[in-house]
Length: 253
Image (tube, rainbow, N blue to C red; front, side):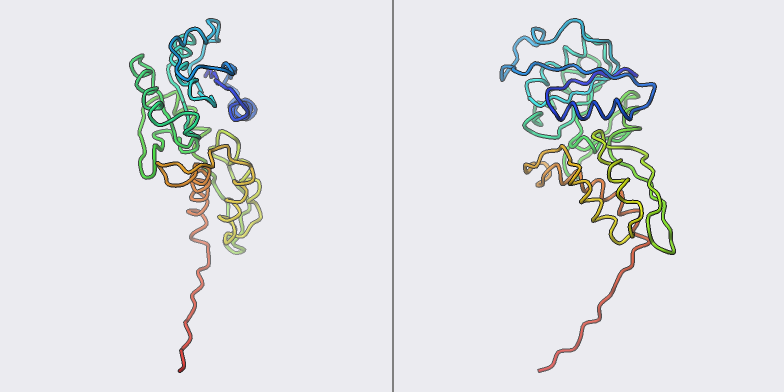
């Protein structure tokens, strides 16, 4: 699979570099540095997109300027791409209305576009748009990407007697590499401390999602990202955790 990452800053470069370093051997990934300065509304996107972009099957829109989203249809046209992943890790970079427009523009071109919010909510069948609102999709290229990167999926090996984590297999990493980092830090921990430590490891990676309050979640996208990872860990350690009960004392006058 041929991938083209459209980048403009550290966020995109870190994502693309992690994919290149840890992605499957049969993937090829190129980066295109989008223009640093764009008008608020791009009337002629073709003026900003080079005609010699490399052929690609899947576009990864990692821009950190909302105007870059307006270039993506032309990028897809020039590269011959059949699918686009345009994550919403910050409303400043891709507002929900523009994300909806981008999906529509590309659909008119026969191109599937997903806009996972946050990026680490992407699975092989759907992705999050808001709290308790997931959007299904049907595209083999995006599903192939999400087989390896997207919503973190860690498989814990537990010692039931000692109630400790003995190994962690990363079945699906976050695009930024955070899940792999968390997995390394969980080995040897007690099941009682695994969830909290997973949250701390995620926080210190650091997560690249926004720290501003998002209206679709009523929380920061960074916290939503961390909770996705914690939930994956929590479900696996839950049967092994010890629940302590406290018997209230009696009151005296």
